[in-house]
Image (tube, rainbow, N blue to C red):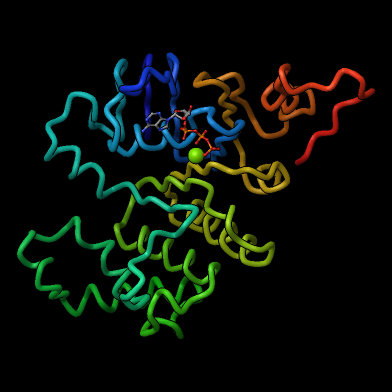
Amino acid sequence: MVQLQGVSHRFANGTVALNNIDLNIDSHRFTALIGPSGAGKSTLMRVVNGLIRPTEGRVWVGEKELTRARASDVLRARRKIGMVFQQFNLVKRLTALENVLLGRLGYRSFWRSMIRAFPRAEVEQSLRILDRVGMADYAWQRADTLSGGQQQRVGIARALAQEPALILADEPISSLDPKSSEQVMEILRSVHEQDGICVLANLHFLDTVREYAHRVIGLKQGAVIFDSGVSNLSESVVRELYYDPAALDLSRPSLELAS
Ligand SMILES: Nc1ncnc2c1ncn2[C@@H]1O[C@H](COP(=O)(O)OP(=O)(O)OP(=O)(O)O)[C@@H](O)[C@H]1O
Ligand SMILES: [Mg+2]
């Protein structure tokens, strides 16, 4: 589904966020992306989504090579990629339903999207998707009146309205309480298992990774330092990923790892 070959990215200020990444991400396994702050996880997602063209290397999503595509082709490829964000990124003054309908915009001409004329079939489809994420009763409620967990479910519904082949979730539960987190993760699991959508999620809590992911990719300083089945995510791997020698207090007998 997603293939990266020798991908590096250096920002204009000289920061090397990705360093020679080779990856193949398939639809069969729920894949978690982990690593310390600044490791390049969000940059990697933006490269896969075509928002950033990497300074080196090649990226394919499906059959399409984004790194050689024209801007219009990147846009077309992007409508098959749903994004889910930590801060939900809903349009606050629009209803839940209107936000889900925004997921259809990639399929519409500019003028039709300007007048916000949505065909009945798309409205019905969006209502069905809202029902699926348990948000049918809130369809007509403004996004900014919803709780965080409800907003994130609408965020996933918007991604699903795109009929995506791939969902990139960048810290989808980092702003949520445990109960909402579980609801959101269960929806992502069902999207993967029942719809066969490829899911790549950047997750901070290792307990969540162990519960939901099949494959784990560990990034550190822009490089992949771990890529394996979740059962191989041992304490020593975690230590290597998150361990920062500069921050180590040698007087302590053992390093406590938050998970
Ligand atoms: N637009 C930008 N211009 C310059 N440097 C950037 C830009 N975006 C990100 N970076 C730098 O690239 C590196 C990787 O950032 P990125 O946001 O991908 O990390 P991350 O793994 O998502 O971290 P976090 O877990 O904190 O979200 C960091 O050093 C960051 O400061
Ligand atoms: Mg990030």
